[in-house]
Figure 1: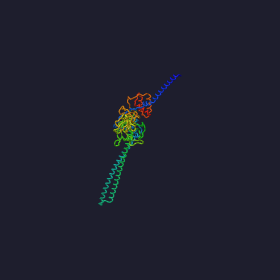
Figure 2: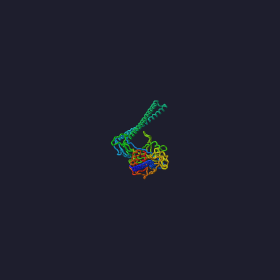
Figure 3: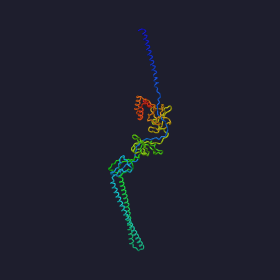
Figure 4: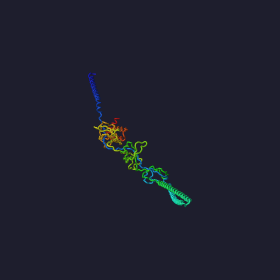
Length: 495
């Protein structure tokens, strides 16, 4: 190899080495600078959440006690027969569900035996009256005998006085005086006997009068039994639990059915001891407050008014609280009937200077989030006075401040938020995860991102069914509210 050739080869190798060295230096330099640029790119910015807000305003509220009760009849009657016998006639309405009017005949019992009893009672009464008449006649004769005996006694007494007067003048004999005295004594004994006979006849009259009274009572009882053979309705109502048929042989006091007054209804419902105290007035008596009953049918809910009437005298075995009865004001017998279950809403005494908020706005111990300076969240403790379904009545809160209507897991003190007014003033979201969003603040999702969110929501067993259905409905739309996407993606990142 010539010297020139070796020189050119060395220069080529040197140039190639310098090129490789430059490339290596460039690669190393970029590698050293890459973490800094990546850090600058990945540096997160503060996330701002959109939250629904409301204003805390003080007002006077009458809390509602919610309970569940059962309708019962305020006036019902067990239809019974006071006499036994065969049923010979039966009204068509005497069956379950039959409507009967006051005074309407329900059934008749064979009156033959009862008519015989009435005839025998009448005969006994006639016999007793005849005995009374004979006793009265005997008393009249006995009184005449007594009067005659008394006259005889008076005559014998006068004769004795004459003999005594003659004996004093020594004109009469001693034998005549003794005979006159004996005659007077005999007349006196006869008069006494006649008076005893009068007394005996008077006693017979008294006994005869008692016998007449007994016969009259027996006749009245027989007539009453005959009248009871026809059973009538004492008031208008509906028949139930009927257990009779034409030709059946009844026994006395057997229950034939139950008559219920459909317009005289009452509801019984149980409350706790604390709730019972809230229904008392200042004198410790149960208030005759008006309550609302909600009767739920298949599609509709009907409301009825009732007035608290009384409280049960005892708690009942295995029960707690107090059992209260309320009388329905104007029930519709075609809509509500005994045995129906209803929801009871009883109003308490008004509470002043309190605030009503959604239950989703507070934690179980009463902590709520306020919108502070710079739209940053602040947390305060409220005193929960009442739970009213999905609403709370609280106090000890800064009136006039804006607060978050629905607390979410990603929200906490110090976070910056974007307040969003709800569509209707005072409306609360459907659940704790609900957050009304602006209609224009929406984004379009690709299928992979949408599928991930749907899978996360369907796997969340702590979400209420109605909230899950609403959120899935939002995710099925072409454009989804941005706050909804950010909220659930933040939860996905925490897990």
